[in-house]
Image (spheres, rainbow, N blue to C red):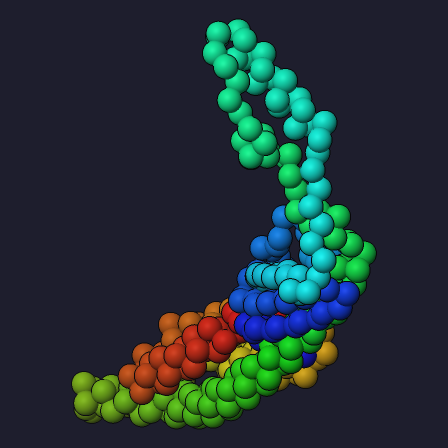
Length: 292
């Protein structure tokens, strides 16, 4: 299936005082890579989130943003580590005695030390939050997937149109190449006739020269292979599995055939058609780079 690697999706879920919003975007990448930006206490969820995304997508660079909030009416729990506070106070008392000054630290000063007061730590029901996160993540994944499918259809349509153009140009090149051999024979005949006006022509020698030229400039095999690649590419576009890498390989092969055709041609009009084909192939290559 032709899916784009570019897309964006959003999902949101809430319950039991928790609100989770997931934003997911992707761009093209050779492999499947996930980068997450999560709240601090989400660290235990990171591997699960990465796994869920890689189960759904084969390629792409994914950025995951998760916003976690608590409803305004949710009960706030303040936890005071009294033992730690007392330890801080005793340390300050000892320090003041050592340097011979009075300890003036009050309750507010002690409360400012790290980890003495924590807010809401007891409200993080990780199981409930993960359940909401999964719901929001799946919604974001589905929206992203839908966008990638829609964009993939547009890419497929554009590629098929360009393949049709290449097929038409290739047919024109093949026909012109056959005419070119006949024209070469006539030009060779006229030149020899002009140079040796009264000497009879050696038809066998002339036929051999034409045959040698025809063999050197023959592009029949290249045209056949190019058309074969066109057919294979159209078939691959209908496959259900990710096809980006296959398409990329075929476009490279088509470029090789077209380059060979260009190197064998000594006719300006054919050379121009080769340029036109290469231009279409380059546009297809650019599209293929964004296909999963």
